[in-house]
Image 1 (cartoon, helix red, strand yellow):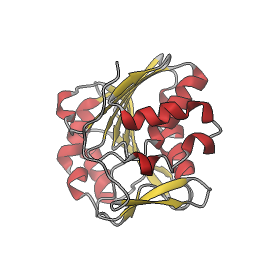
Image 2 (image 1 turned 90 degrees about the vertical axis):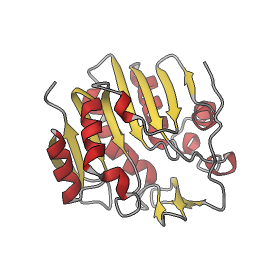
Image 3 (image 1 turned 60 degrees about the vertical axis):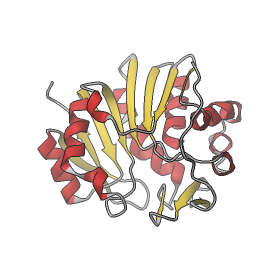
Length: 230
């Protein structure tokens, strides 16, 4: 099933494209005064943080359920799609994004070409243009509402990729991590690029086993949280 998006879009007046040090593109959000990825490398950061240190930890499962806050450029979702295709693992992906991008913006990101997958460009475009679609190994959904309370023990992987706490403090409060913990499957994994002490303490209070691990290039540490209790 394909359903068209009807959300308000971010355009050139809101964001602009930047090239990061690994040669991949990202966006800079003018209102938050924040880039969407590390300027040391958009793709290298996403691969390290979300694929290597979250999705790969769940690769023993035959069907992996992913939740992402927020969808943004679609890079993490597209990398997850490529992972599903390569390993023939079924992935159900749900991303939240209140302000999707205009085609004039996301078409400049060029991730399929950078990732040597130009044949999948149409999939990357679908991620931005429709709410839901399916391929052989990947089921995609994107929503604009932060309705995480409706999910319980549902997700094996949680990509927490909101803007930094200084830009979106409301998304980094205790209530959020309590809800995320309830939505995490047994032995599920939550990761974020952020390593702030107060964020770590909120994850611990929610019930996660939390560790600081080596971050992507340019970032000394990141946080990885595991749910051990059912």
